[in-house]
Image 1: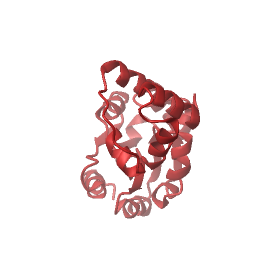
Image 2 (image 1 turned 60 degrees about the horizontal axis):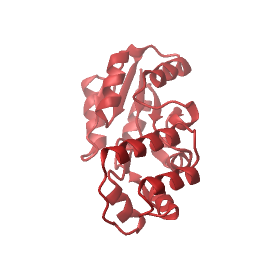
Image 3 (image 1 turned 90 degrees about the vertical axis):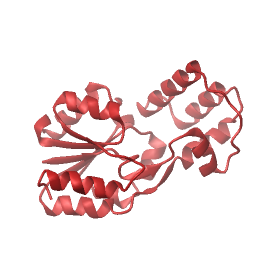
Length: 204
């Protein structure tokens, strides 16, 4: 079997809100009312960044504009750099158990070039046999095309893939593809959740 992990919210703890990112970066939390247009523009920018269509500086400038300059491009860049926190405790040991049981591992992550450079320094990510990142593939979850591209690259049938992610849309898309997809609660002990799901499937 191929055991595939999302990174943020599964193997690595990340900020979950703009205010949390500000605090992590040491940038002031300032009043801002996010309307639907702002949220759509922001998500569009994140998707472009994670597809590798724009780089970090361009993203910071554009996102600052969507915030009407309340946060400068320099502050946005600091917040983005602070978004990744630390690996979840115990996940490295789970990966080692998977390998000891004879299974292949991989990740499939929506991420950016700057975040990828940090993520790939974590031992839990480095230990994975295969690593797939949205900005390198030019595709993002939950678009079906990224799951198809992953299958093509790994040579695996959907029934051979167990997938862990913390976001429901990504899980739903994987299930539609025929993957065995399990949602992880990023607020809890992710290693215990991973191990329980793998035990249930008699994979470790």
